[in-house]
Image 1 (tube, rainbow, N blue to C red):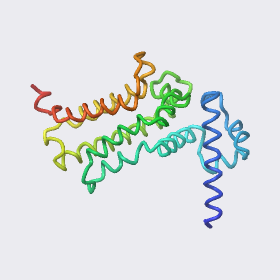
Image 2 (cartoon, one colour):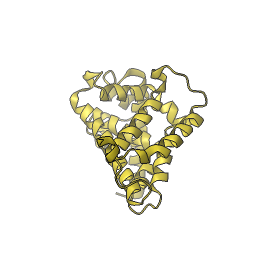
Image 3 (tube, rainbow, N blue to C red):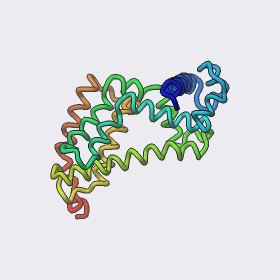
Amino acid sequence: MPKRTHEAAMQTKRIILEAAHKLFSEKGFDKTSLSDIAREAGVTRGAIYWHFEDKGELLVELCKELAERHNLMDELERAADPDEIDPLGCLKRWMLMHASAESRIFFSSNLAQLVGSILANVDSRGGGELRERLLELVYMRNQLLSAAVRNAVNHHQLPVDLDIDLVCAYLCQLLVGFCNKEDIGYPIARPEEAFSRIIGFAFSQLHLLRRSQVLR
C-alpha cells in the first residue's frame, strides 16, 4: 500500500475510533449503532467494515488505543523483556502511570465504566462474545504482568521462592482499588502523591510474599 494511501487509511481509522469513543460514552454500547458511528465520523458503514469486523471489535480496538495513548502498557512490556536490566523499576513505573491526571480522567469516564460493567457481566446485553474479547485483553495484561514479576526474580530483584501468582493478584488489586476509588467512598487528597506512597510501600514488601510463608 502506498504511503499516502496507508496514512489516509490510518487517519480514517482514528476518526472512526474517536467517533465511537464519543458515542459509546454518551449513549452506551447497545444504543450506539454502526450507522450512528459512521454518521458521527463522516464515513460510510463500508469504511467501518474495512477496518473493523463489527461493533465489538471496534470497542476492543478502542480500549487498546486508549491504553497506548495513556502509556499504560509500555513500561509493563519493558518489564517483561528478558533483556531489561531493571524490570522491577519498570513494573513500579507502570503501576504509577495509572495515577497520572489523564489516566484518572479515563478511569472515571463513562467508557471505562461501560467496559467495567461488561467485564463484570453486569450489562449482559453486550453479549458473552464481547465479554470474552475484553477478557482476552485482561488475560494478555496478566500474562505480561506475570512475565514481568518472573523477570524481576530472574534478575535477583525479588526472592527466588516468591509466590508470583500472589504478587500479581496483589498488584492487580491495588490497581483496581485505586482506579475505582470513587466507588469505595473514601476521599483521597492529592491522589497521585498518595498512590506513589502506597506503591512505594507495596513494593518494599513484595519480598515477603514467598511460597514458603503462604504454605505454612
